[in-house]
Image 1 (tube, one colour):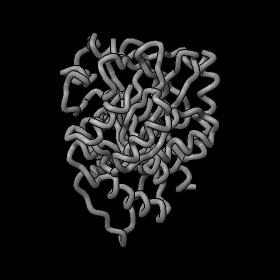
Image 2 (cartoon, rainbow, N blue to C red):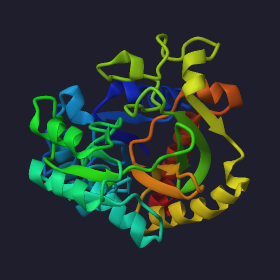
Image 3 (tube, rainbow, N blue to C red):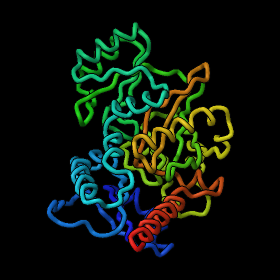
Length: 330
């Protein structure tokens, strides 16, 4: 069966296409940055894999998620096999919804208040009794809108000033700042609802980080990509310093605690491919603060440990397509 890949950023999806091509798997490129959906038509045969990103608006694709929502609804109504379907997209586009799903699975999340106006944000700050807070976009990606505030005056100046960066959906999160003993977060990667590896991400230079080999952040200093997009045989030292893969996380006490909970979320929320990001406080308590259903990988960091998540993803899609083909033939 053809593997239809739904996305809006060819730079992030090309590595997957390359692996599918090497494995001679038929695929199609459903780029949602400029597309219409004929709701009266019958979907093309094959399987559909959604990797739409919440940060599409930063690349000029403001309504790609909305169009993808229409596409997924059409596919699911027609009975087409879809991986990371409508519910995955719903979580990708709304952190408040993510936190509800996490809490339902008894996973700790940072204390968070969803706000619309500047006065809402200041009132939210007051409710934290002077504790440091961070702002972040409700619909985001790449750490968009993340700012740290240790006093009310600084937050008031920010939300009332020209430098305020609003979320594309108009909702800003005010969140209690989790002070980690060391400046890093950990990202847990899952493919086919199975844990692949953990990656430790250095946040000392800022929060606007994604592990993709191509990164379209305006400030290149925050981009982990190496300039030759991983074509070189030698890993890029800057990238591998910022992203370090831990293949032993599953055996750790933290892994044994978190991984079953994350898998439970994936099963409950119908997520097939996703990543969970968490931070630990000074007492070692983990807080998951993001579910990413458009997961990307850093090939430089992977080269150090000899693994390719994109190749694993291609294998998973091929296996799923083969299973669907066998079912159709039976």
